[in-house]
Image (cartoon, rainbow, N blue to C red):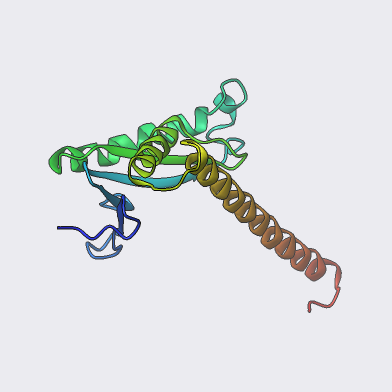
Amino acid sequence: MLFYPFGWCCPFLEPKGLDGTGSRRPDIQVHFPDGSCLVDASITHPAAKTYAPMGSTTPLSAAIYRERFKHRKYDIIAADEKSPFYPFVMETFGGFGPEALVFLSRLSKSHSALSTSPAPKNAFRTHVIRALSICLQRGNALVQLVGCRQARQHAGALVGFPLF
């Protein structure tokens, strides 16, 4: 019997590097009372060279493209384990891939079914989406900060400014 630390689901992070590559399994195996599923997370940048042509015309096309890639990579493992697979893809501009929203709905339904909280049914889902959005934007800010520092160091080296 599994111990459910949240009372309604039990996530297990998959260890990386055991097979030499670290990428043969999805990131997380989540056990719900009614069964388990596999989840692999990814963040895409719609303005990247690979995605820009389609991203400029179709909303969430970068996320959908990445979801298809994840399915090609992990559907066989999921079928062998008789578990559904969810690619959890977010775009750097804040969009959630369609299958990420499906997984969040499953998570929310499981939480609502077993929760004793009087909060509205969608409150948990809304909270998770907001928390993930904040984490994403914080990550974007850190990437920009590192890029600015590197550009400043490079420019300083080129014109003879002292590097601190």
